[in-house]
Length: 382
Image (tube, rainbow, N blue to C red; front, side, top):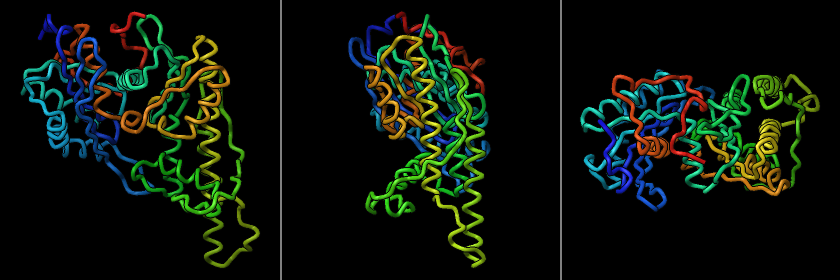
């Protein structure tokens, strides 16, 4: 299906399908000549596993398959369009979890055949970046991409998003999520969000109250955790292991106290809120350091934070302090666009489609490892 010759002279619509992890997002975006992109719909449904557990690929894929049609219909109704108006179907090709990615790719191929629409396979990371640039207006920033599956410091150069630094083991979001499991924290609405609320509670007289209604009279304890920055890269597995060890001390003390087998003075002096506060402060300081180093190298004053962890207010605050000290500024979005969503895939896919790019049906597969710098960014010429 060749790209229509009039594609850039009229409004264009893209249906975006995202399902690389535990969120199924489907959205519709419109590009109109000489106007900013218009979001027509952005529907999302999250698979939430029980506290103390993660989301398994097979269960997440089953969730996506079960609600795919329902979410797609909601997106089309919210956008108030018919299928004949859609120019292309954009789907997440990777990176991500294999089974959920495959479920959504099958849905994308099915819709392509049913509606006779071209497919565009999108890099998940590039989708985050382009949506962040679109919403915030950041022109040429250093990008800090932080999520449950990725941690990268990125800058654009010569039609590529170049990776300057990244995690050497697990992603920062995975570190936070796995620690939430250790503390048996709820996964609703998201484990990282609940870690953030507990970290805020560390400042209150009742650090167990995540409603933050008690007086703000307490100084949280900043516990000593490994700080692992190696040049432009960082590591989070050792920090997680150390935080888990400290958490186990709390559980042992609580068990002994329940059995009335210990002196209260022998219990750890820190709380779960202190642990969450310390974990956040340490990992975010590492991210700020490598981001500042990239800013100095590239010579930019802009930082764009994308990915699910980018919603964290403390990370935004710490990054803002660093950027302002350099005469710069931080650009970030709210949870509608930071967290995985279909509209970012629709936007990035339409940008590529407008340059003539399509994914043939026989090549409309998925890959769990699809690096950001593998994508040729033809739509940018700066």
